[in-house]
Length: 383
Image (tube, rainbow, N blue to C red; front, side, top):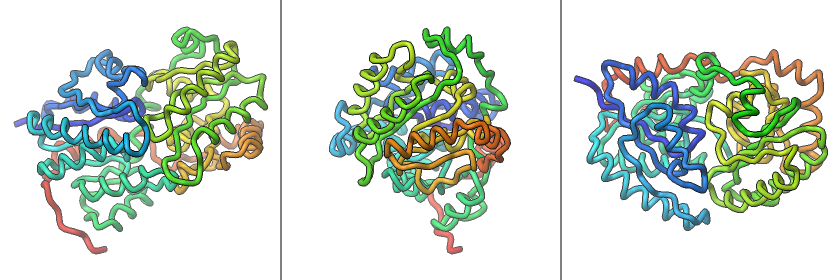
């Protein structure tokens, strides 16, 4: 009898990471794949990215609307509440044997709560990590405690999950799932990428993604203006800027992006969502990645591309030598971009070892998902 494996996705970035896992689960003769789509995917404001999922050939078994137009703390909490209602009905209808959740966002927290109460075993990806500048940090550890299986990205993170009381025989270091693309996904040429974007790219260019910091210590709009001011110090470089996530303060950043792009139409391209194929191609061709997206820390090193990690959002996350950290200060960002662009640092970045693995993660995950006997409850493990 096939195992019903439900996979949840609520954002464009998360779907991109899950793509090859979804492909292998769909192809497995022992799996009945159920795909649950929610959050930013269903919002026109953030690009209606559910359409890209269907264009990739996946059947969506449930669309759960939950994203309110407000990104205030109260609005986010209410979005979680709306999600709880929809996910409860969805899990009751689909009756999955397990639910796969990646990461640490509030959409994932909502569906995890439903699964826990409804006794659906959870398989969690990317637990044990630390990002001190966002409440995602607490969400990630909370989902760990609700989950039965754990697929982590490094041995450091495996030890943290075990420290949280999870039995070692249920915690697997499989590496970072996003690195799978570098072994399996074709990269668009610079010319192909330019045609796809409707924007002629000429190297060198910088790839920018900045998400709001959701804890105190960094005001999102102010920090992003500092980032834009730093970009102005490099007028000879083109810039691709993607929209932020639907976090607290994210909507205040979007008009700043659009105004900046409109001010420099030949130099700056703003886009709501690149999609994972164009994103990884842009990542490959970029001179420097700038912002506070986890991809700059986890994925960029595997391509030999240096990153400038701005502010506190990713503070505490394990990083390769090719990642430079700086505060959300104009001069610090400028200095970090200049260092990352230097021939010496570019050469160093091409030779670093990525601590997040070799990119062969999906086959390990599928093997465990299809054979491991999962339970809805578990004992606390005292290390």
